[in-house]
Amino acid sequence: MLPLERTSLEPMAEALVGGKVQARQQCSSSGVWDDDAVLAKQQELVAATRGDAATGVLIVAGGDFPKQGTPAVGVARQYGGPLGRVAHGQASVVACYASARGYTLVDRRLSLPEDWLSAAYRERWARGGIPAATVFPTRTARAWGLLATLHARGVLPFRWVTGDEHCGNTPLLLEQLAAAGLAYFLAIPHNVRMWPDRPITAVPAATGRQGHPHPRVRRAPGAPGARRVDALAAQLPPRAWRVAQMQDGSKGPLVAAVAFVRAVAVRDGLPGPDVWVVFRRTRDTTRERKVYVCNAAADTAPATLVWLRGLRWPSAQASKEAKDALGRDHDEGRGGRGGHHHTTLTLLAQHFLMRLRCRLGGAGPGTHHPPGAASPARDASGAGPRRRRAARLHPGGAAPQLRRCALPPSAPPAAVTAPR
Image (cartoon, rainbow, N blue to C red):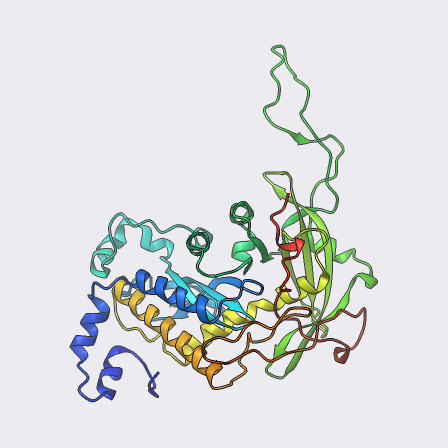
């Protein structure tokens, strides 16, 4: 948190009276302290100061940033979210906890590019301190590892999980979340297919001389096939679109048109669970469209789906603060342990600043609560969130008729139950 251009080990040590560069490098790079245990304690502090069972949400996103130098663990030419192109960088998956009391990053998993999994990179594994038996799964598998650990630990209170297209386009992850009793609201690509109505299925009659029965249910002959979600959006009537305020932007309220469709998800080519498909369309000339899938119950209020769409910004804001203000991407170590230690200390510093901001009366993002929800109790710092008026949907209405709805209702609605 020093006012330095870079907050890597050497400039931080030189900025302190009696600071020893070598001692700090040894503590970070080769120190045997367990950062997973530190993060577990950190999550307990987050639950005590920012936790709220009624409004808690866990956001999973990529934590990519540019990084040069091939010896560093995981650095390679790969697509990085912040740059929007292929460049040298380091990728990871991060988990952000958000509630009506605030937001902060709570966990992370370092990624290895596909090249790093080849035998040619084994020497770099040894130099970086990566155990030979380490298995690095796909990005969505790492995301589930984060979610499963936090859910099983039961320290952070949350009902909802939000994330990007990498998560939303992985049926296995969706089934894992539903089986864990978690409700999800995840972005999906436009080419994902769904049924507007549940098709008829049947077990085909036995065929052939032996009369062997078919081993599984199939879609009945003549039943319509699943359709792309962008095709579903294209056939919506104008009255299906409503104007809603997504969130407060740096230049004013962000308003968009939204539509909600009840559909049937595809699982292994067959009808799966009933889900909500939420469409968001910008109101400018581009009319850019985003699509989301949600396993909330059929009686979920549209306002609940609106605030869920607006819950992507806490993760982006937290990652931006960790990089721009706390130097999460300033680590100059080459080993995996040092990189994890640096990230752990960054997460601790961010939570400290969030608590300090609330204690001093700051109204940072994430301090709002939804319509009808009781204001969360004040924490030990004495800071409480500011009240905002209720969010509403108004067909074709103007922005002044809308009010932001950032977080879910306090009473557990049927929306948060696992799909049948």
